[in-house]
Amino acid sequence: MDGNNMVTGSMTLTDNETGKSVELPVLGGTIGPRVIDIRKLYAQTGHFTYDPGFMATASCRSSITYIDGDEGVLLYRGYPIEELADKSDFLEVAYLLLNGELPSAKQKEQFVYDITHHTMVHEQLTTFFRGFRRDAHPMAVLCGVVGALSAFYHDSTDIHDPYQRMVASYRLIAKMPTIAAMAFKYSMGQPFIYPQNSLSYAENFLHMAWAVPCEEYKVNPVLARAMDRIFILHADHEQNASTATVRNAGSSGANPFACIAAGIASLWGPAHGGANEAVLKMLGRIGDKSGIKEFLSHVKDKNDHELLFGFGHRVYKNYDPRAHVLRDSCHEVLDELGIKNEPLLDLAMELEKIALNDDYFIKRKLYPNVDFYSGIILRAMGFPTSMFTVLFAIARTVGWVAQWTEMIEDPDSKIGRPRQLFTGSTSRHYVSVERRA
Image (cartoon, rainbow, N blue to C red; front, side, top):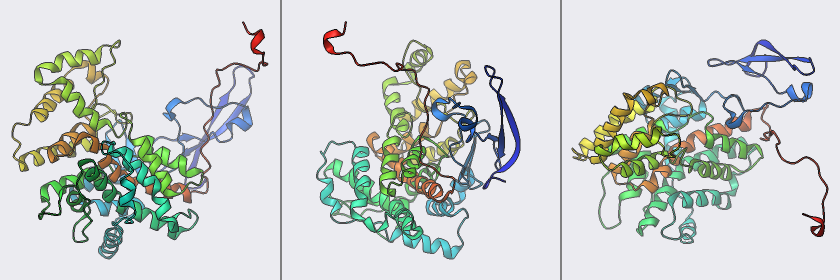
């Protein structure tokens, strides 16, 4: 036994040049591929492994989220994402990710109360926002403000104190919608709206985003449910780029607010959290159904740099299970809002139909992913594309803090320090400028 992993066997590696062999343990988790334990490889052989993007490397052990990309499976603590999206709500899922089990009725009531009563932010943060330009991207604002939270809440930055870790986690989950809504309001030149304890997590965010002081705003329950579902589907996704960034930042002992800010920065990339924003921009470039075939010809041309956003996934080699859920939500939202002939939805549906019947995409297993539909839903709700990744960050904060906590509590955790295959100059001596050719 090795920690939580069972040694299921061993593998012998032989260096063809020296003939030297080394036996490495093979570890098995509860489900998923077995892994070769290479922690002693360098000490025993003087060799590193080479794995760009860590596509075949397990950097940690985790019991939070499991993905089977070939089968299109996503489990939160063992529960299929489809069941949670259909039967649960976001804060119940947040409790599950943080604690490993679904809460009892009493536990859920207490957790919802604790999160709800942490949603207000320090009043001085309102002046902090004024340092940003009005046209600043909301993700830039979010990254900066979250990174500054340790200056306002330094009573929860001791990562070795379990209570302070819990308080920091609750604060981040609770305050992220408030900060995101403030970034949105600031970009529009509207006054900030304070959270209301009588509203659910998703309702509260929508109220802070769309309400104005001069009139009453009632949150549409269909839109609130769709937003809650988007939050559930984006809450965690195993060791993706932003989660790995949070873990790597946390491995140095950085405070939790700094770690989550690092995750936000990573999430901003168009290949990660910015993909749903990229989907809308892509559909805008296509224009209408008549432009789909020409667009796809550019995608297929290896000499062209056109990308098909919203299709395919680095992990899923099957239909993204989250996309199934959001496709239904997409139609519910559009029907509720009376959008019968939404050009972008019609274009998206036609693009999906053509791509799913094209041998080029079938052979490459490029199926619609969660970003394909989430962007259309958020646009129908009225959010500008610049806010899409911000909403992703609200949801993913739960997964980040769960993964960060797990990393802190793992006795095998070490500071992240990848190795490299050096291809630069070998040792050489300095030559004075007068003698250089």
